[in-house]
Length: 256
Ligand code: PEP
Image 1 (cartoon, helix red, strand yellow):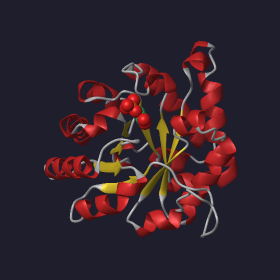
Image 2: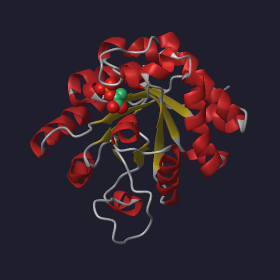
Image 3: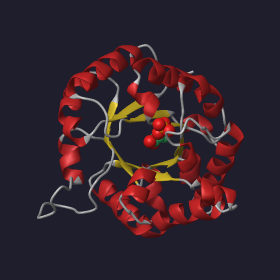
Image 4: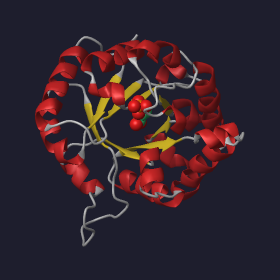
């Protein structure tokens, strides 16, 4: 497996946080920090309403812009509250997070809907970041492998394995998101290796190049050992992505 081809990605999921002023200050600090390290890619995913402003702030930097969600609907129409992939492209997004566990658990997104969102992103050449991961109950019941396999295969079945040539997967155990309880590097690596095996079974070349991010209470203090794992190619970071210093420490660990 040619791991050197997997360029690390550190993505910040801001969720429903920040004001216009705070977001601008955060991007300014990140831009200054990123200029010093070029061996990884940094992505920020602000709330929808700040995307246009963020695209302006990011201009001239190497940072990428992404959305936290996307409508599965294409084109235009009477879909109140929805944001299409075309609109996201229009304001400068390159990535779209799909299937975040908060969308799955709080807003009832099913595997099928997540797959439709994944396809909607790719239809307009946005790179989907497909989030998968088990709950605490599922882990304790020994169902981690079954749950993650189901979530990944729902999308490979729907979008086709070739689609993973232009996608990212994020393994985010729900019990580690926003809880301060991180998966150990070994626990994370075990599931990342499972995900890569699932893709390898269908296309080894795509699997070798696929970036698989870990998410769940990643911080400056634990990033290095997580990122040192063979199948961990970056991070999807919530809370710590709102703190420029901490997020840059994570980024620098990936860029080393
Ligand atoms: C996330 O929301 O994707 C996430 C991983 O959050 P946190 O880093 O706060 O656990």
